[in-house]
Length: 239
Length: 124
Image 1 (cartoon, each protein chain N blue to C red):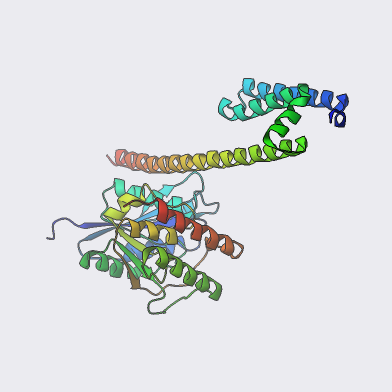
Image 2: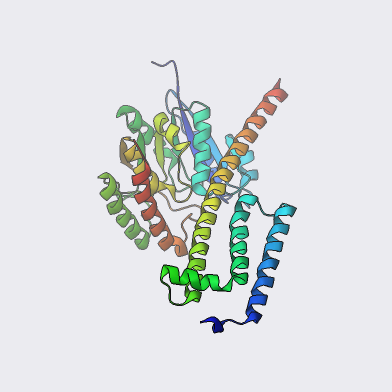
């Protein structure tokens, strides 16, 4: 069974992450999992700072978007790359250093041993590490109820971008992935498609640099947009 | 009933709507406005011109659909038409957004592929 190594794509969307991106990529390159080939793929979402220069000297695949697409469009580019290049698994790791690279083996192991399609790295299972602000947790709590209403699933950390997909999921998301704030919305898509979803406890760090894709003023817009999107995704998605 | 509009406003509205039609036509001819989006403007200008000549027409139609004051009919239908057109524009923008996204992703993926091939060639 040692013959064919598992190909794991680590997709790192980066928008103005010059301070943290090198550390993130180096951390990923330092991981080794037996019989697994890990490739770091940085998607530079038309950064206006020196992200491109910082990444181009690193040992990783660099995909450079000429127009800013936002987090969803950027990550989807990575999934398209992973699909075209026959990767078996893909995991999203944010370019700001929030997601702990050393937890990647844990997520991959979960997906392989229990045959899970979507493995989510969750802050809230053991409540360890960086926990996010009160307002944001309130929002996440509301979305949790809202997602439960449509899918019956209880997903604690529904805004976590630290997720591992297997090839079946990659095939779906490479053609169908929301542009803006994709995390909660895509959960409905996965549930409707009949994928198995599991959360695994991870310890997240506070962002090492850059800004959140959800800024303070946008939080209300975020909640409304995501709630509506969840509803319509539920209606439009066929199994 | 006949008295509440004067010839002055009739002449003004004829001039304005003719001018508008002329401007829309110029945009189409110059290629600045695509025909599919121009249909709305051409039809609404033609309607404006018809009703600036045929003044009684408004009263007749208003009476026929049960609206007491003809101007109310004008406002209601104009607002409705504008709303529909705005929705149409949102649809157009959404489609453009999707196409733009796909194109950007394709371009980025191709660039990456070319870089890889170039590197391979250099190493040979």
